[in-house]
Structures are given as structure tokens and as C-alpha cells.
Amino acid sequence: MLAEKFTRYLEGLKREHRIPVALELWNGQRVELDDAPRVRLKMNSLGAARLLMNPTLGNLAEAYVEGAIDLDGPIADIVGIADQLAETSTTTAQGSGPSGWFGRHTRGTDRKAIQYHYDVSNEFYASWLDPRMVYSCAYFRSGAEDLATAQADKLGLVCRKLKLLPEERLLDIGCGWGAMVIHAASHYGVRAVGVTLSEKQFELASQRVRSAGLQDRIEIRLQDYRDVADGPYDKISSIGMFEHVGLKNLGKYFEIVSSLLREGGVAMNHGITASDTESRAVGRGVGEFIDRYVFPDGELPHVSLAIRELSAAGLELVDAESLRRHYALTCGHWSRRFEQALPKLTELVGERQARIWRIYLAGCALGFSRQWMNIYQLLVVKSGAETAGLPLTRDYMYDR
Image 1 (cartoon, rainbow, N blue to C red):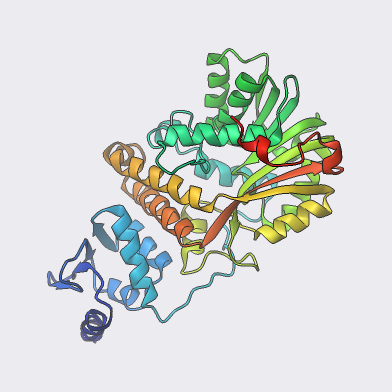
Image 2 (cartoon, helix red, strand yellow; image 1 turned 120 degrees about the horizontal axis):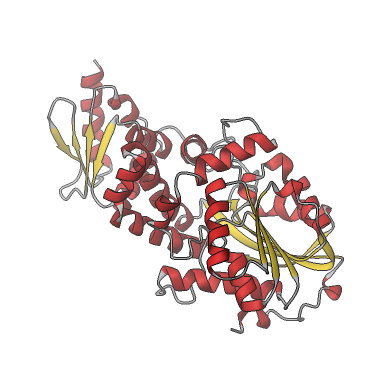
């Protein structure tokens, strides 16, 4: 019965949609939904038919990760064709928020979530990130730059927006492998503290600081941002971190940033935001997939919610810039580099984990290009711009 129903479904799909995919069924039969298929989708059992008759991007990705289907073809084509299949679905999965793995944003659950994502291995990330291992949106002046150049330009942009000055104290919340604090100390002469919950990031960032000879200017801590107690700081950066904070803790997060910032100090929050004004998860099942497989307990606020909460915490927004198109380009670079290193990465983390990351990175490139989510740099001051020493215009941000 299911097999007959699926056959009729495929006939209608081919007649009405013409999707460039060839399906290899569980019984060896091949069905091409277009005359020039770019992707091969192999169904490993009849049970996969139920999924394909009402697909979402999330459950197609899950089926691939769990081995119910196999996919062959360029990864960008695979994700694009999965999106075409999802558009035929009668289910419109908006997403109500992540299901959660570990609870909700205690120090212990946040540490577990961060370690799950970032402690895969340093070699894993080094295989597809730029040499500085900057795991956040790059900045492209033309779009033709290589990834390393665009990431260096992003670090420079953040430093200029903060208007870093020699001997100022900089706190970098979620410092990753140390790229921001090393750039800020070596180019602007600041004294920096970087905090992370990832043990592997802490180890490599500390090693990189020593290799750069900057131990007298940079301290890397394995520490929760909520436990930083040695403020005030002149400047604070938070790059790609507040996605892990949680919607209910967003106000508290900005209160802590404000409490750690001196009067007239400047802070930069660089983070992914929801396109949905209600801060619901990315639709089409994408949010659920990311929460289950990639970023447990991650939640994206709409930029309006972030602005409301930072304002309530005594911070004044002085500049907001969307880098959505830049992140589409960044994820495209990451995805291509991941594909080039796929045999090595599969050996490092196994077939299932490699499949998760293949789909995730290519899917993010598609998602940012389609405006499913956004990313903003929000520049704020404490006690008003007139006390922050910032110029009246934005010209200073782009003078290199």
C-alpha cells in the first residue's frame, strides 16, 4: 500500500515540480524527477517513503545524518534541491523554538552545550576555518576576498568600531581560539582578557598567546562570562556568543555586559538573530535539526528584542549593521573548505558527524542568502555616546 501510494506521489511530483534529482528506490528502481538530475538520492528502505511524501528541510537532513537516505552530488546542489523538495510539502514547519537537550542555560548546561559543539577537536576546526580559526562571520569588501583576508578585515572592523586605544582593558566574551584578543593586543596595544567555556579552545588560545609573545597583555580564562568579577573594562567584545545565552537570559546577559563596562565604555555584540519578529526558531524544520544535532540550547532573538533588552540594561545603541550577506559568503567558504577536506574530516569524527557538518554549513549558506536568519553588529555605549569618545560620523569605522 505504501509503495503504491509513493509511486503515485512521485508521478505527481515529476509532473508538477520537475526537481533535478534522481531517486534510487529501496527495490533498485530509479526515478528521475527531471531530465538532467544533479543529485542522486538513494532510499535505503521503504520507510523513507513516508518522509519524502511530506518533507521538511529538517527531517530530510535528519534522514541523511541517520542513514535512512544517502545523497550524492555537489553539497550546494544537495541543499538547494532539499529546499525545493521541502517547498512541495503540505507541512509548513514554522518552528516554535528549540526542544533543548540539557535544560535551559544554567552554568552546567551551558558548559555541556558549548563543549558538545566546540570540543569536537581543534584539528577538526582547523581543517576548514581560516588560519586564525575565526569561527564567526567574516567581512567582505568586494566579495572576491579569500577567507583569511575577510576574517582579518572583520577583526579590524570590530577593533575600529570599538575605537580601541593603547593600554585600554578589553574583555572578549566567548573568545574562541583567541583571534580577537591577539589581533587587538598586537595591533592596538590593549590589555585583553578572553573567556571561553571550551577546554580545547582555552588550551589552543593560551598556546597561541604564548607563541605570539603576548602573555604580558593577554589572559585567556576557562570561565563563564557570568563569573567575570574584575571589571570595569574600557571595551567589551562579544562575537558569535550571545546565540548561546537563551531568550529568557538575554536581559541578564546585557546587564552583566553593562556592569562590567566602565562609564562611557563601548561594547560590541556581534551575533546571529532571528528573522521572525517573535524570535521563533528557523522554519522548515531547520531550527529543530540545528538544536538536536549542532547547537543544543541555542536560541536566536530578533534584533528588536536584543535592542530592547540592551536598552533596558542601561546601554545605548549607537550603531547597528547587518552582515547577513557577509555570513552567506562566509558559510559558503566554510562549506567548500569542508568538502575539500571531507576524507580527513570523516576520519577524524566519523561518517555521521561529518554528515551533520556538511549539511549544517551548506544549509547555513543557503539560509543566510534566503534571509531565514540575520546577523547584526550592535555597537553600544554606557551612559550615552557623548561620553564615549566616539566620532560624530561612522567614517572612522572604515578608515584602515
